[in-house]
Image (tube, rainbow, N blue to C red; front, side, top):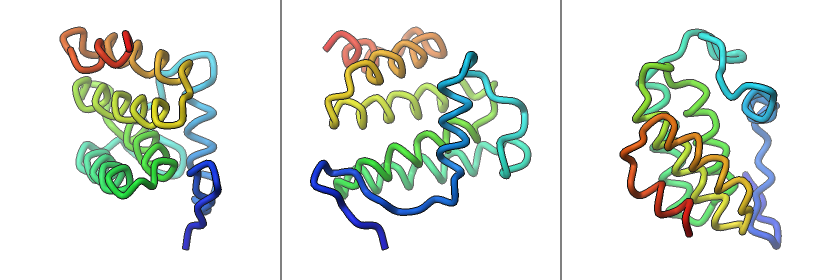
Length: 128
């Protein structure tokens, strides 16, 4: 059972998967290989499931867990699914916004706009 810290972050263990994925995202390139760490081939249904879990966590104010799920969803989503990948980044940017992590908001929104330049909601969030 996750414990909620005073700052709103949770301490649910995810067996190191999120940390591995974040390392790939933060590293020199945000592009992931065709296979994700311990996940096998990229899968749109799995990415969509993880994104829905993230949405459920966000609605329940478990924002740290939501951010973890959006990160995994992005890493699991096939590269050619640019709109879904942009949505994962936009949702993760909303989590960064919740925690006042402005650099994270800008980075995720910028990358989402690179994937989908017509994503108006992300453009507005980035400008905000």
